[in-house]
Picture (cartoon, rainbow, N blue to C red):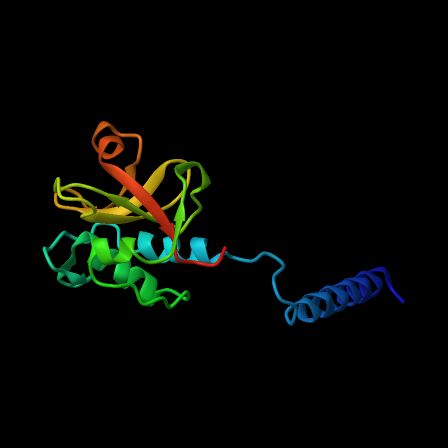
Amino acid sequence: MGAVTKRFFIGLVIFAIASLAFLGSMGQKASASVSWGQEVTEVAKQYQGVKYKWGGVDPKKGFDASGFTQYVFDHSAADIKLPRTALAQYKTGKAVGKKELKEGDLVFFNTSGKGVSFAGIYLEKGKFIAVTVSKGVSIQSMDSKYWKTKYVGAKRVLKH
């Protein structure tokens, strides 16, 4: 066997082994898993920039706060049907302390002076995603001067 033929044959064998290894790995499932909370928040993030609309429940026309949370939970793999209003959503799930918040928990605020009137979805590290009149769907900080004074509590509706 000549040198060129020998190199070609060795290259062909290496290519065949690598191809078989690749094809053999295609049937395996990925070992990493996504939590329900991550899935819900990834769906929520897809709507960043959608405008605020009072009574809105649709990304094409706009959302209000509880319309956004209701839509996201219903259209995520979690497939959870939340009530329509922030107050009704606040009455569902399990109460969660601020220090125990997990991604995908619902966070509630009093923005009207009349009890629970606003809902968002907790992300992590003190951040949540919600729709506001001024910014539409956007990421907010629970530690901001505005939100810190309006926080009422949180509920867990997902199984973590």
